[in-house]
Length: 104
Ligand code: FES
Image 1 (cartoon, rainbow, N blue to C red):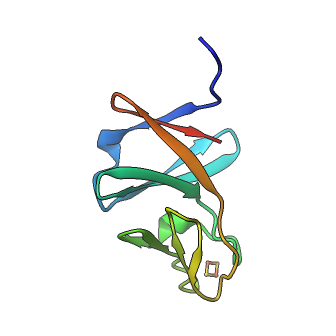
Image 2: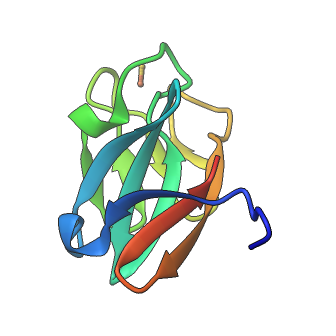
């Protein structure tokens, strides 16, 4: 089978709608977020002052950093609330049955 670069990181049952889960792919920490049944993936580290977004909360497409309140759209990566201004890295996601795969 051809190497697509996708890596299994979770079972979809581990991330109910409206919730998030941090996973590791090598040294990369990735935040999986279930937005209305669709899994999205982004860097787990806030790019303002490097704090784990998994310690914050999620509201629809937005995750909020608990340290200074920056918000990011997990679908586009856009910073939607300061102090962060730079977009965050997002990852391509695929489902294979109940397996959640990302391309790191
Ligand atoms: S570290 Fe996330 S808002 Fe400052």
